Length: 258
Image 1 (cartoon, rainbow, N blue to C red):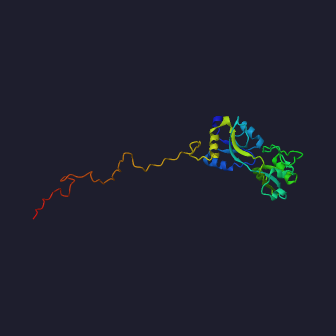
Image 2: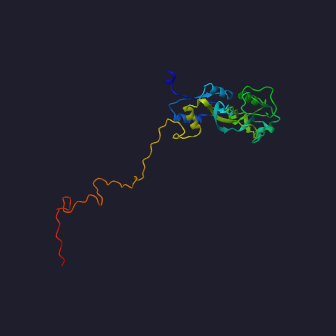
């Protein structure tokens, strides 16, 4: 099979915490003949995967290199602190970074938050991953500040989380290599932006809607044609005394006035 014979497909990368199911479902409804393959990638590896052609587009965490990639920001996540359920933080509705000053705050190597100064006390070592940090929180070693989606992803019954009001926030975006904006990428952009099937900007395989016939009268005020077998008041009158006249074709004499 040659390159031109390979059927089209779309590869979508996504980083931990992002749930692409909604957009995938719309793709399958609109483009059922083009399979969409999901590619799970670590946040730190997303740019390399897109750059090397491992995916056509991806849901990533900002920032990205805007000299190489295009990006459409989608939403900003709430930042939370993950703690054991018996921690003092669990009694509050929300906390500040200052409230964590006495805690060991774990800082995994795959952290997605852009900290100027990490709150709390540093751990002796940085965990390799967020998943490893969650295990340390469960063991009572420290607490962890992450985007809320990651706290949900690594949910455990013995842990809980609370919003941190003054922590950095993580922004999620759809991104793709700027020099590889294919028709299928444009299709997915349209889905993410919420364009309809018949949007003039979205490239879609759906057939255009048939225009509805106009109910307005034709230009010039033309009248409706009479139905067959019927005549108007001025058209089609038979001449007097002719074959098409009254029965018998005879005219009576006028009566004399008395």
